[in-house]
Image (cartoon, rainbow, N blue to C red):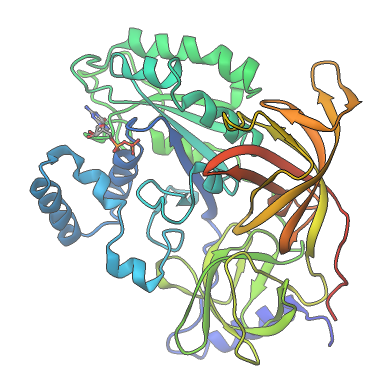
Length: 465
Ligand code: GDP
């Protein structure tokens, strides 16, 4: 099969679009697609803020809002209705439509944001890690309410863990959203805002290694919407004259991407509707309508029949960062699964079971204090989930002294080198070649116990025909 010339294919699509009534469109070139994840301690206000963002940016229609308001009232939780916007109905869930495609989506003047692993959609990704591993930016939500900040940050809360995980997963642009400023215990106090900033800064820079010039701080009220799109009123917080949350979002540096890179779309979900429909984010490269592709690791060739982008736009092509729904024509009745990856025919990803990796262990389970050869857990790599087993632990890395020593086991919070084997082939790349496909997390009984980077693929299966 001849390599395809994507530029020629696009030129042809442009030509025919000129004569069509409902022509295909090109993805918005002014607004870049980017992905953001909201992290932070439970009840800090993530769902409320996401609901407010969608509401304020006009992404939710009035009828739906009313339904949510009523539903929240019915359940006796008046002020919670904003959070309901983030919750899907059963009907939508049955249809298999994922939040990544168009639902939790908003725009600023230069960017189109998808909210990954949006709160309220926890069924799709087991926790924030799945979302954060694909995000370009993270918003760390903090409750300013008296004692809530302290609980989340000091007393075993998730604030520290989430901030640290986001950095380990490659996020360097962090927006610390100090929420609930309207609460009577806070009352838009500048002192409270500064206190939280002062207490968190050393942790973010020294422990997590964020560059503080890439960390933004903003006081907001998720409930009233103050400082989200419109600046908080001067009479409410005369001391604040910084940017709004949307202004910060708009100013964040864009991720570096290239349309020339090999195509990779890890499949997040799929359904059947006159053919196979797959959902996913273009992690790398460019996909063009009409293009022939290969589905890994099953090595089935197919054709891209249709590409649907945000808000049901029919696209000629989609570049990295874009969340799409694709109609795929495959020759036979094939079983497409979550975690399979769509690739260029002549530049496929690795389909491997075994590889070596550099793994940062987190807190291990109480009852399993060490990991060593034979340790079994679950591996999450992009959208793939597989049982796996550690074959061998080869070294302990002393980060402070930049030294490696030989070992055969690892303990909580150590960094180790290991060989690991998944039960089935998964689509991966060495981290240095493509970090989106080179990262994984290890989970044991629902708890994340390690964050890994793939060093070398030991037993790369034979390349596609
Ligand atoms: P999540 O667990 O982080 O998604 O938090 P939720 O969005 O479910 O919010 C937890 C609680 O905090 C709910 O009772 C919200 O109504 C409340 N809350 C969220 N944002 C604000 C805010 O800006 N101000 C006040 N006063 N309460 C808020």
